[in-house]
Amino acid sequence: DSGVTQTPKHLITATGQRVTLRCSPRSGDLSVYWYQQSLDQGLQFLIQYYNGEERAKGNILERFSAQQFPDLHSELNLSSLELGDSALYFCASSPIAAAPDTIYFGEGSWLTVV
Amino acid sequence: DQQVKQNSPSLSVQEGRISILNCDYTNSMFDYFLWYKKYPAEGPTFLISISSIKDKNEDGRFTVFLNKSAKHLSLHIVPSQPGDSAVYFCAASGSDYKLSFGAGTTVTVRA
Image (cartoon, rainbow over all chains, first blue to last red; front, side):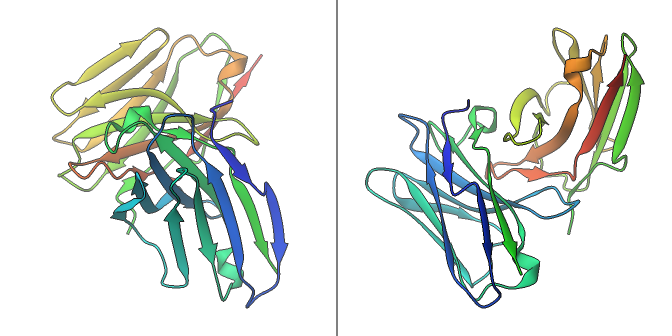
């Protein structure tokens, strides 16, 4: 158990819909990351927050948005969903905004768009 | 644009033998490299890392080798054990600390 909690674990929704994925970081971790893993692809970095502020942005679509709340949990919002958005979405956390080997991943949220 | 590539999607090895996983990268600004291990229904977990100022880092049965001129790194697992059966991801980062991952190599250790 990494200490990073993601909900829901599985989600099936229709095209055009909107979903919210939630992440609770490890206790004390200030930085939260979101990654997307599509079929046969590596993890694609989406976005990072540090203590409530956006720190870095990767290949995140405009239809996607995220935020980190004062209690440090984070939400990833995916809207106008398309079939190609079906993927495993990982959240990760770390104590600080750097040091990649201190990043701990959650178990992921499986999103299936039908 | 895939900046980190793992060209072997799978690897099967006999228990007790060496597993060698390969990874290539294209971005010369990468200066920190990591390997993650992932079991089914779990998130990736950090395994071992290497800074670009080194060419080798060892941790128990796991050794990572870095060849900067070839933009290539490899992970050696010796000896391989059944519990090593998992998906292994190679990752790299630069000064921005954003991780770029490869597509993963599924290792199966045969008894």
